[in-house]
Every structure is written in structure tokens, then in C-alpha cells.
Length: 145
Image (cartoon, rainbow, N blue to C red; front, side):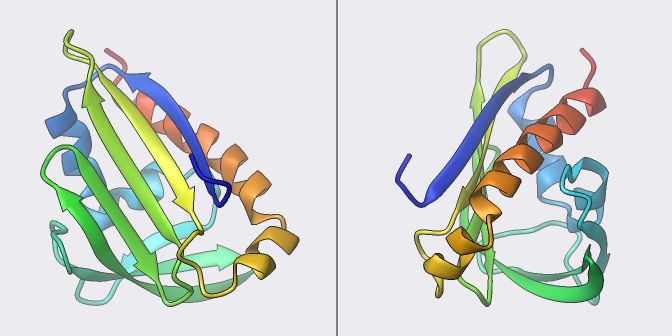
């Protein structure tokens, strides 16, 4: 990982297709969010994301706000990433382990952010690393194997 990326991985007891279906449905994102900031999908979000798809989310970090995201990386059942106006990305990589389970890696990538210094000074890398660990635990709990 680069210096402007934070990643964590966990093995989840489900095939990549099942996990990807959850990640590609914005309405399901609040179920796995470990940060406590993702509240609900909003607007005319597609039922299933694809490359270039846009979707909005209701968020809360102290105060409520809304965010619009665009899918910028997409490989069916393997990779999905989205970014918003600030330019940073949330990326999910799914790698089958060969036993019906999947290694899931979530990355907060601010190498493409418009203001990487602000992201670092506000402590988002550390906070997001902790939230990613919680998210992966919640995701694993959805597929108890």
C-alpha cells in the first residue's frame, strides 16, 4: 500500500459473488458500516452498482450531511471502488481462498484526494483504519459460515 492508503483484510465465510452482491447494493451499505457515519442510501440510486454509476448516501459525522458517489473501479465479483467530490476512494477487493471463503480487503485511498493534507491533519487515516476493521467484522458477521 502507498503512503496515502489504509487497508485492512479479513477472511469471510462466503463466496465472492455473495459479498459482491452486498457491496454493489448501496441500500445495504449501512448494514456493514463500522464507522457509524453511513445512515441510508438516498435519491435514485441504482439497485446494483456498475462502473460509472452514481449513488447518494445520507451520512452523519457530528451533523447530518449527504454525499454523492461515483463508481470508478469495477470488476464483477472481484473489485469495486467509489469516490466523491473530495476525490478519495473506498475500494473493495475480493479474492477467493479456494474453500468457499473470500479474503476481503477494504482500502481508504486518499492518493487521489483534492486535499490530502487536510485528510491527514484531520486524522482520517487512523480513524478510517479503525472503522475498516469494524466494517470487516460486521461483514463477516453477515456470513457466519
